[in-house]
Length: 139
Image (cartoon, one colour):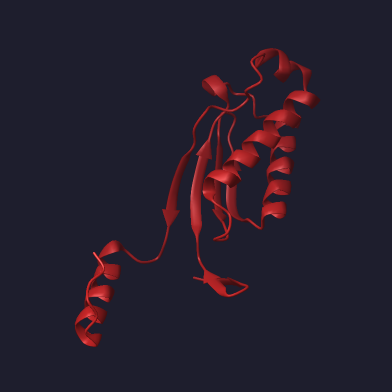
């Protein structure tokens, strides 16, 4: 596990993200697939997001990313989906005709965190500090 650091912070925030094109159409292939990958990489570079791993299936995007604390997960996904939707529809006429409502991606997305420790370990750690140092519990 490698921690990253920035100005006055050290972090290890990793997320598994999944989203799909509207109606789960299998449109992520060929030139469209390459262009979506390129656009998402550009957004990651701009926002300081590190791609750990990722896969573009024909009908959904899987990403395992490390997002810095000053960037919210929803902002990253919003920007990646928004920019890729706009550019894909501008550049590929067959996509623009299929998605005539100007929405390329489904409305939502899936997100889960990743970590090397469990809730039980955190609870034991906090309990030990409460009893050892005489702190009062916050909750």
